[in-house]
Image (cartoon, rainbow, N blue to C red; front, side, top):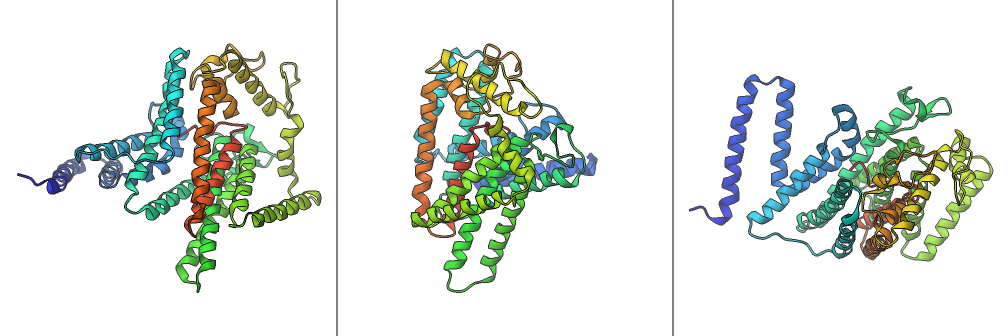
Length: 458
């Protein structure tokens, strides 16, 4: 009889033995490169079995590769990040079932998230393309499962888990930012339509498009900025300065600088706008006394305006920032003359108008979650037949897909997210820096969603 406490150990020993025998057999006839891949996959599998957070962390690193894998390896239902995430979730759920209990953590966000998912499901009953809706729905189910997995696996060491996941996120962001800066300034070549001022090329990383790349790097930049502030507050509050805290602060500051370079390289106005809004939120909530936050924001705004008036800001960047407002207009854009300068802006406005048309016809529950693209043909403006996947304004996109009810459920979810994050600002440094960074991320994401949709490419 095997005692319950030893069942896992015995099972693990047998699995390890069988895998060792399999690898030994493969080593005889597989080429070295293939053998190395098999060994790496086996190691990932075993480490994920031991600790699901390892699999989740690696999935965070592989997630941004989805679009690149689709281009290089061909389109498939699942990319490497999704496969590893499914393995991680399966291991987590399997461990709970094997132990005779499936622990579902009670989090503040579970009910609002479940409500939004429920409304999304209700909108699919009359959707024109159920597969599109299910694909979008799976994303949100994954979000909920990841949240529960982290809450469960991080119970024993919550601080260490938080820092581990933050570190892996920043590592994923740095890999994208460095690759993006190489595409922007060092490679010397790129897609012709990404050319900037005849010299640089918009960075796109492995996202294959500058805007989602800029959105991802922006979120990681804001998180890194919060971590830097947290470590700075921690070092400042200590009675004496020590080597390792200073090294950690230097690494966080360097990461923030490199990520900022990647953000600039994207040449994405939406990402820049999100960074400005997220950065302002971070500055406002940084001091525990709100009036100090207001004063700091005032000083930063004054310096920015002064620098702008004296042309300290590069003309290319200032022109990029102001060009959207020059071409922006409310109302019907069907009769607007389109040229190279206003094309991107008018294209967005045309898709906004199509989304409003969907909402007008299906006000309460929309055309179906994830069904903006299938429904687009019935609402497309004459010069804009391509659906582009979404409305380039996530709030209008939601209004079109899930109606007023779904948009209110989404607003309730994010109200809960902001409330919980602001509530956590009472923690001490350096953990408070993570909270500040997350608050900045939520604001940056929410503002960027005014001109785009970032729930794409994992």
